[in-house]
Length: 325
Picture 1 (cartoon, rainbow, N blue to C red):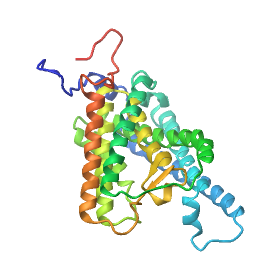
Picture 2 (cartoon, helix red, strand yellow; picture 1 turned 180 degrees about the vertical axis):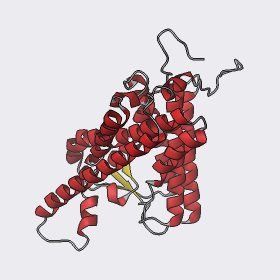
Picture 3 (cartoon, one colour; picture 1 turned 180 degrees about the horizontal axis):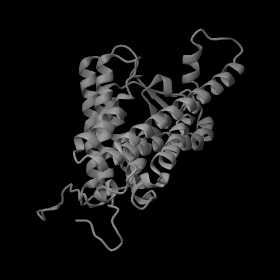
């Protein structure tokens, strides 16, 4: 709560308390586990179907087989589009889990109002685009290696809308799963944020491990992702709605997909490419600085979205006529 001593970052948990108590009596730990299995199964099936179809199309257009065919496919434009499309499986799985396991509409995961707060979505998007720009400046100062991407400007403009749409599909599915389904269900059963916030956050973070990167780079990436997951959790806690988290996650991923890529396997649509994190030559000191940059930018984003004087301050989802403390 605000002490009245001046502007600060404050969070009123009223909106989140309404959100955490919104599940019905069928949201038990057993059903939550069963629903998660349904989501994982549908995601796996959809991923296999989409990637097999995309692989077939990719090799059908190749004049000669490549010795590293699957890797080339995944790094190709068709491969990236296929990988993003595979996240539709999470949405399908969540719909089935909510409808048949919990007996609730899928929209219940978005917030108590059962709709996305679009003003907060835009604030989250803008805030992350601002801090992503700062992050890129700091990373450039650390490693001033940047080159024009392979995609032409005309092709980039042609693919902007499909990439934005598919990136929204990807990021929204992750937010509704990790900050919606899991966080809401666990918060309904447990009071401690060490359970309802940490468990989904750790699971989300662990999925970003890359076997192609060194241990030091993996560590710095996971620390940065954990800081970002904390940011996403905090805005859900502050608003009781997924809107700001959806916008923030979209802004983060669009920066990497369309503007400046730091991953060799996902740079087909980026206007510029920086030194890939999977590449050799990174020192432990570089990894530490990268992690610090990620943490600092996530903290700055938290300030932009939660500080009382910030023009991007998000709004708690409260009953009509109620005011946030």
